Image 1 (cartoon, rainbow, N blue to C red):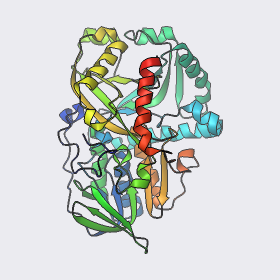
Image 2 (cartoon, helix red, strand yellow):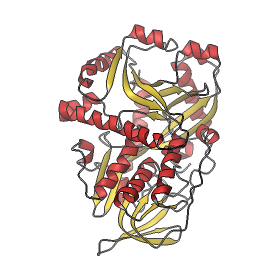
Image 3 (spheres, rainbow, N blue to C red):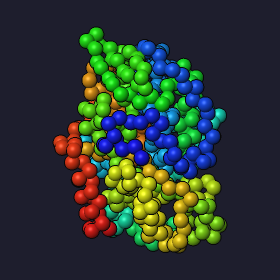
Image 4 (tube, one colour):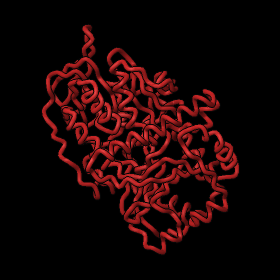
Length: 442
């Protein structure tokens, strides 16, 4: 599959041949894609959650002529491949991390912004006739050892002044609610959260973009970018050229090194893999105890996450291969199937009907950013695999930033993504982390 660290540019329709569960069950509207115009006020690169929301906001709220430029199909990357977890958070930092670094007031304000991101998505779905299997849920962080349980339990009181509710589940309560888990040491359940069909959500935003008058151009990877002295930008894509005043880069983990070298060195594309089983029968579902209202993630450094889908299948995800060319190997599929059985031993012998992988964007300090790296250029990235809700709101915030509006005084809106000090060694470090986890992780 396409690899951002080894491919010079992203291929047109790079997702061709990618078979996912969401593709199989989700009808998708016509994109109404047209030829690339010669000019626009704003070009948005990347038609996932962030790019679609940014384009809608600029066209609808600021009356801009917006061209939405996508290398593949609409939502071809993480926006159509994720697990459908609508979570009150993004990046790898939790409440405790924000409190330790920025103080309790900022940490609480961050949580309120994360709650606002869920409300943003919910509002978009409410205004659409497109079915997303939206289900109110709890985000359940399950402690994988006693130390993690203690840290989770200590966080609970700090959520009280925020828009989030936090309920502590003892090990005994967790065992009663999800009897299939053999190792839970307790858990923290956060609401609001929700489960949904992520590809259908992409369709909701696409319909918004069409209604807002956004010009949609798919199958056009950007191959050249030049900033002119008059403040305009010239982009070349698939043999065509467009001139604009502003460029919004919304590709997250799918960003190629060229022609985006500076931004590419500020994030690390890492593979995450997902499998979806056959439908579980009623007895199997009862043994596990999972419901469609549970979005579960453990506290391991290399986390596993899982949910029961509306048709009774179990979705299970975790880290993938190191390189794109190894993403779809049988070895990776078997590794994730073994992890599923380790999590739920009752599912021994259950094999996946669907298996796929995709790129997430990891920030050096584990915190996403919405920022302007240079004049007339704006970008958002670093969601660390938890971006369904925040990536959607980040698109709106990115558009507000481009329109010179003040953003909330929160850490991820006040600084750029830091550069990796030796970006060429990112994968060497990742291999070392995976090896360390195999030897010492628990």
